[in-house]
Image (cartoon, rainbow, N blue to C red; front, side, top):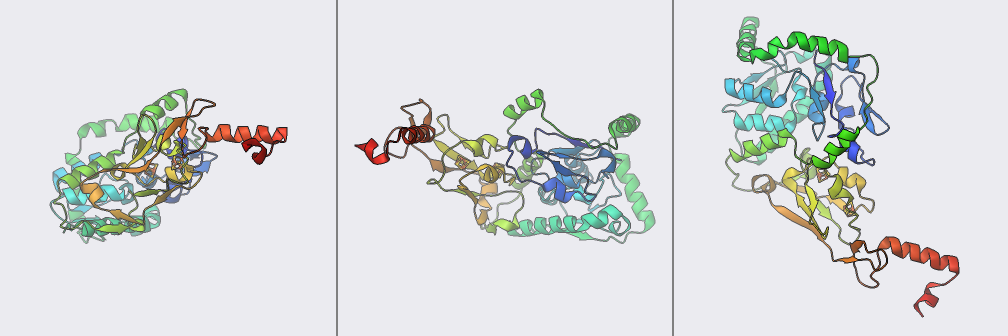
Amino acid sequence: MSLLLFDAVKCVRSTNKFSTCEACVEACPVETIKIDEQLPSFVPNDCVGCGGCMSACPDAAYKLDDFSSINYIFSILEQQREVLSCKESIPCLAALSVEEIISLVLLHPKNLTFDRAYCAECEIAKINEPLIAARVEEANFFLEAIESEKRVVFASVNLSVEQKEQDRRAFLSKLNIKEAIKAKQKFENEVEARSQEEKNHALSVEDIKRLRESKDVPDRRKLLMMALKKTQKPSVYHKLAEGDVSFVSQKILDEESCTNCQMCYRICPTGALSSDRLNSTIFFDAVACIKCASCHDVCEPNSLTLRSVFDLQELFEPQRETLAKFTMKRCNECGVPFVYRGGEVMCQRCRIEDEEVMELWGISPEQRSM
Ligand code: SF4
Ligand code: SF4
């Protein structure tokens, strides 16, 4: 069975203690993942290796030791297989994210079928079925919106037992043989790594260093961009309701309430939110947004909100948007740059400290301004 690996650096909870993300917890069919204080924890022995959490995590913090969805997709494309089944080198169809399903369909010359024939026999698939069905539905909705004629169907394929066995063998024989040779080694590693004990996660010094350096979109976004580049642009760029797209978003920023505290663009894992050298402007690249909600969770004045619609043009013709522009000045008291909105050249922190001192001395605001 596959071994679940977790990269704490990629989890949005690592950089943001206010993060409310529970995507992995919600996707796990055996409920072994839970949020232990800040980061997720799980009992490796309880994990069934379906990959549901892996595909649900917005920043791809989970992976399975013996399955790569990207490699799988390229194998499917290479062999032009039209029926995808959990009996063939994918632990469960829940291991594919919506973005990966869309990419696979767009890059495939024919329509695809996700075979649900085995779901009824599998206790885990029975739990995962609604998740797979919802992803297929979202993928088809997206494909229709970009005027693609391709679709994916989630249905039982009535192949004979012999046909299925022939297909399976043909597929397996074309898989990289080196992977099979690693099987024994993998088994030994697995025995050592699997445990009944809950696996808690914490950031090491090395992790923190990596955290500072790693701002990138997951591979599945790169795959989607590649697939869209090869796809004919739609005649009209539709705007999809925000709730109809789970993997990308657009933002509105309220300049009045934003304090330019820098938190959102510092913690954004992909660099979708960014700033200039002086921190005087907040930029947004929708194409890099993975809708992890970390920026919303961290924003104390709630200045960032989701746009009610997502404009598909952002995926075909990405543009950097300026969400906010500020006049920055150095505080006369502490010298730290701050958002200047007129009046005294003093930052918020010094202003509060100043007011506290005046209050302590019993000097009223009126007396002060005399
Ligand atoms: S939008 Fe919120 S988190 Fe981002 S800089 Fe403004 S106040 Fe800070
Ligand atoms: S901008 Fe997108 S990717 Fe960045 S923190 Fe916000 S939701 Fe996550």
